[in-house]
Amino acid sequence: MSQPPSHRVITPRILYFGTPVVLLSTLNEDGTPNLSPLSSAWALGDRLVLGLGRLGQGLANLERTREAVVNLPSADLWPQVERLAPTTGRSPVPEAKRAMGYVHEAHKFERAGLTPGASHTVAPPRALECPLQLECVLLDVREGTAVPGEPAPSFAIAELRVTRVHAHDDVTVPGTHHVDVERWSPLLYIFRHYAGAGPRLGRNFRAET
Image (cartoon, one colour):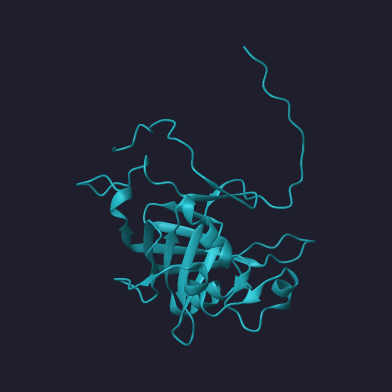
């Protein structure tokens, strides 16, 4: 039996060890759309859990309207996502975000070069270039847990329920409701770098395709 690899203790500044990128569509108070790039998202059944910064406009809009669209970009859309990365819908820009280099942007779809499209069950628009678009309603928001002796977290955890799923034809299995994992290549965020998924490695025993 071969020996396991050697290892060491590290203290990374961030723990984005590999999560899908999300573009969250919400509506501002004046009815205009906001588009927020997120890097903390996971799904279980028809529920989505998102991690959102407290200083962003996306969370404020979500709490106010309780509706959103979770758009999942493909790997080739990373330049459009990065155009949004240094922007915020908040005006004035919170000082903590300004210090990190963020600027206010009122026209997020235009800046990213993405096309808004009408949703079926919620008011915020979909980003039509994204191969998967999940219309959602908000169920709950929980504040990040404070640790004694450390600053209070500046994020919240939102639980949403998916009400409708839109998918590009070319990432679905014809005649079914399944996503074709050979053709769907989600954009991943790994330690602040963009990456695409590699080739399929195997099949779980519960897979239906």
